[in-house]
Length: 284
Length: 147
View (cartoon, rainbow over the protein chains, first blue to last red):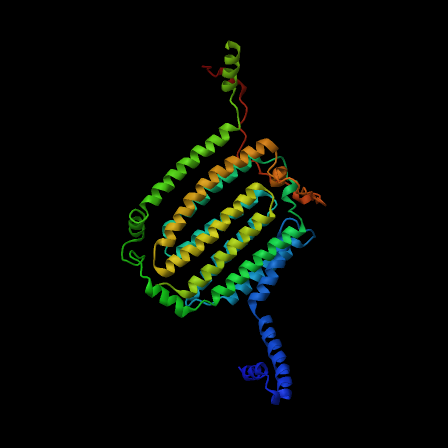
């Protein structure tokens, strides 16, 4: 705040304030370095740095004896710092529950992409899905939590494991131990750090006043808190406002079913078809 | 009317899940792990949508997540069928095998310094045998009525 008049004086080029301007420049650099120091004390910055290094160490391309242990330790530290940066909830119990679930989700996600065996990746992804379902329960989304467990963990993940069973070559494969090279790995980790850092900074600096006004302005026609039970409310909205979408989703599922069958059958010419073709050739 | 703090925490976790999935998709070369990473990105987006839905007291976000789950199921079915076909043609799940489909004039990606597989990674889990092996009874075997 003190800098503002001095800066204005500099900008207007007041000749009387030559020495004052020099003082102002010195003050300005002091203030800038103070701002940088306060930035250095920010947990988010350190969380990003530590997390980036940890993620880089955990990815399958890294070499070294203690890279995994070091990587996991750094990731845990990074998550703790991130949790320290975010705003606190009013209820301590909710706070602890939320961060247990969120921490398990994120650690499971990191384990998913860092495991060298795809089967372990799938199993860690199951943990991520289960804890995500737990997080959904926080937001009055009971049906979605159950659907996530039933559809994702129950159906999609089992399908992954089936395909792994059908398509896994013998032993460990070399392409699970390497990546696209150090440049691509570094680039990917940096972009992840940039996304997390940018989003976290923007989200934590959202204007609470503005958010509340937005909610007050746009009252939904059929709200979650309308008094109906969860399933009744969900069904009412799903089959009134989104009826056509439901039909389209059903058609899409049917088309996907037919498409998957067509892909698998197309790649495998059946013996009967070959025999028919040969028989036709001899007759013709 | 939701809780602003809860909303912010959820959005951060959703963004982190998305970014981790993105890293996995870019970095990994196993097609199945890439697919899992894509599903993880969908999970991150779902978390954000549900958080906004809870904050606004509106069903819209939850509806979108419902359709995300439906589309993810379709995608998994078709994607895994494709992966199976690609595996049958190439014998491996490596996405780099298909770089011959790249544009003309592009240089090929060549692996450098392939790391050796360490011995401790070659250990496979083994199950201890459970139950009791039945005793052999030759006379009962002989007298068994064969249908």
